[in-house]
Image 1 (cartoon, rainbow, N blue to C red):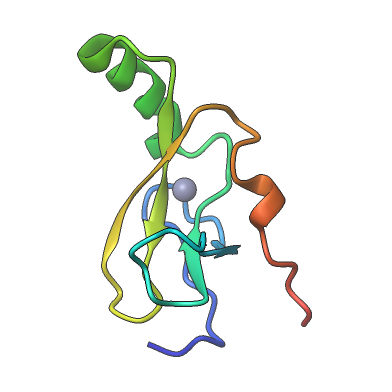
Image 2 (image 1 turned 120 degrees about the vertical axis):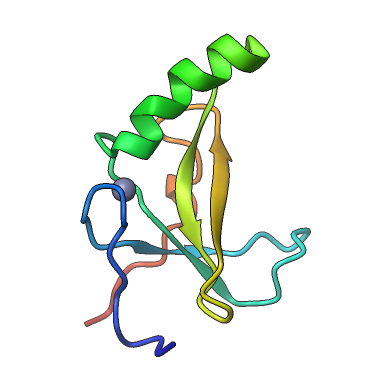
Length: 91
Ligand SMILES: [Zn+2]
């Protein structure tokens, strides 16, 4: 998995963004690929799902580990959550 190639979200086709890995996380990479499209079906569906299943107002964004290629949810409590940690693409 090359770091130079920007992966696309499998749910909405939008180019994913580099998101700085929190210091206290278990991920060892410098960043994670995250889909920050607010209209992403995965993110949109998540609100309903979390409300019905957990009674919490939250959702999650599609995340992919650049090292392993493994993907999973990144919990988000609002549309703006985590956006302050997006790493600007220098290219
Ligand atoms: Zn998406």
